[in-house]
Length: 164
Image (cartoon, rainbow, N blue to C red):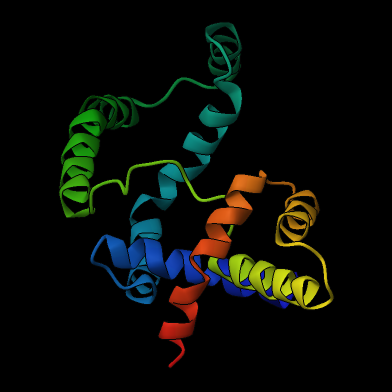
């Protein structure tokens, strides 16, 4: 994995957990406890997930296996019946701690791309290329609309004030 991909993946995980009010590394430390608690059921759930493409496949998978003991059967039924409530409570609590959606359409260019585009436009302009032509070239190079490039160009003053 390339270093920049690795860094982005880690940053995304850290930021996602930060938005939920949790520390990514603290949650990861607690992960083994959760896995250990549910470990004995993990193989069954993994088999169910891989065979639950439709009712017929799931039926064929379950019929091919052994019948559970009465104790196992009771545990499975209790687990199946309580999972929706556990998930509902957990998801509601998690949802309350999340920030609202930022709204709007996602940006097509990252801030780093916008800066690079403005630098390239500036270089082209310095070489005598007309501003609209330089913007058109960048739109083609980055596979975005010319209007997206124009918006990035309009925001260039913000980066100069940020870097001071």
